[in-house]
Length: 357
Image 1 (cartoon, rainbow, N blue to C red):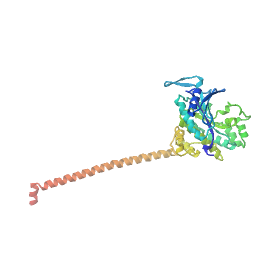
Image 2: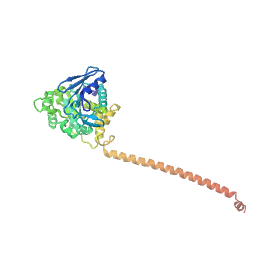
Image 3: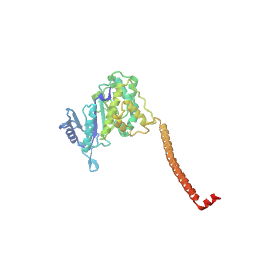
Image 4: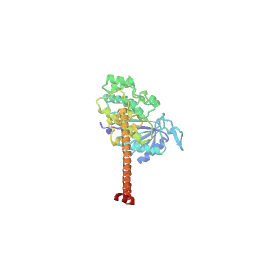
C-alpha cells in the first residue's frame, strides 16, 4: 500500500485558546458556521466545506494557560482544548497545517501537558501486519523517543514503550486472527469497550484498534509548529505502510553508534526520501547525534582530517604562489637596475679611457 492511500486522523492538544473560540476560527477558515454540541467533553464543532466535523473538545490532562502580554498565566478549564479532526486523507495535511497556523495566530499554544496523537485506519491490518507494526515500533522506539524529544515523564505515563509481555507472546504465538491478537493485547478477556482502559497509554496503542478501528501513535509532544505536525503524520503513515507491505518485521532493538545516519537510513527505507520529505527528515533528525553522511563515526573523522589537510595544502599553494611572483618581480627589477648601471658606466669618461688602453 502507498502511504498516501491511508486514511488518518489527528488529535492536537492545545491551550491558550478557548474551545469555543477555536471552533469559531476553524469555521471562519472554512467559510462555515460553528456550533455547540455539548456532550461530556463540552464540545464545539466547526464544519468544513465537505460537511465534516472538526471538533474542539475538553481534555482533563491539559494544564490550561493563556497569554497575558509576554507571559503565560493560569486560565479556566475552557482553555483545555483538543482539536480532533474528522477522517482525513493525505491531501488534508495542508488543511491541518493551515488550521494550526490560524489557531496559533489567535493565541493557541502547547505546553508540556499537551501531546499529539495520530490515528491511521486499522481496516487494512490483519494479525500478521499488526505484529509487523508492533515489531517495527519495538525495534525503533528508543531512537524515535530521542528523535521526538519525548520526556521521561511522558514515556512513563502517557506513551509507554511496547509492553515486553505483549511483544514476547505476540512473536511466540504468531496469532493468525485479530481475535487472538486482542486476547494477547488484553492478556485475557477483552476490555475493548472501556474507553480509558490502561492499555491505551503506549506509544503504539492497539486498544484503539479494537475500540474504534484505528492504530494510534501517542508519541508526539504538543506543538503549534505546522511543519512538525506534517512530519509526524507522514512518519505514522510511512510506518503503517511498511507494516502492511512487508512480509515480516524484526523486533530486535536497533543498536547504533551513529544515531543520525541509522535513523536517516530507516526513514529513506520507509519511503520518506527525496525533496518532498526533506522537511520531514529535517525535523525528525534534528535532535539525534552523529553524522548524517557516514555510518561509522571514525570514517566521518577521517574525512574531516582529509578535508583539513586538503585545505592546508591549498592554502600553502596559494601562499607559495604569491611568494614566487614576488621573487620574479624582484629579479626583473634587479636585472633592469644592473643594465642601467652598466649603460651608465659605459658612457662615463673613465670607462672610455679604460677601453681605449
